[in-house]
Image (cartoon, rainbow, N blue to C red; front, side, top):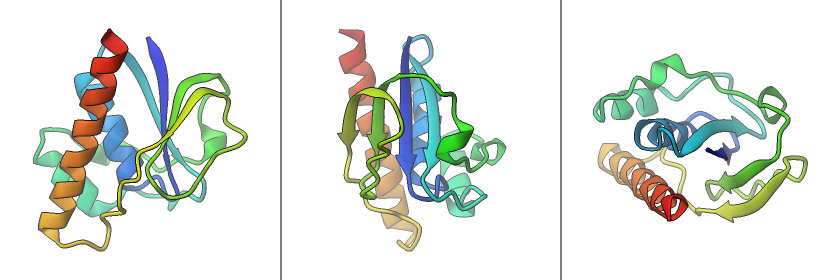
Length: 130
């Protein structure tokens, strides 16, 4: 299985949703982790609500810092577009998905971002399977 780390600043929205989708769709392909460079200490309530619409309980997740994740070499370190490069995280490949932070968007905008993250995770899984 490929070790994938999803990173954003607070580890409260985008990286949490990416980790959730990787767990939902990538069983047997991806070992998913998420973290933040400056974690907020909690998962965004709206992210929990909108992921519940997809059948995933994000309320069981916790906001984590880069020091809270396993000290391993990841196959991919994927940032969400927050400018974090995570220089201390060992990764074979680094990718920036440039996904806007949905925390201040209206409900429709939040759902668009959530669905974009799912699409990107599904594309990643498809690539990893080939």
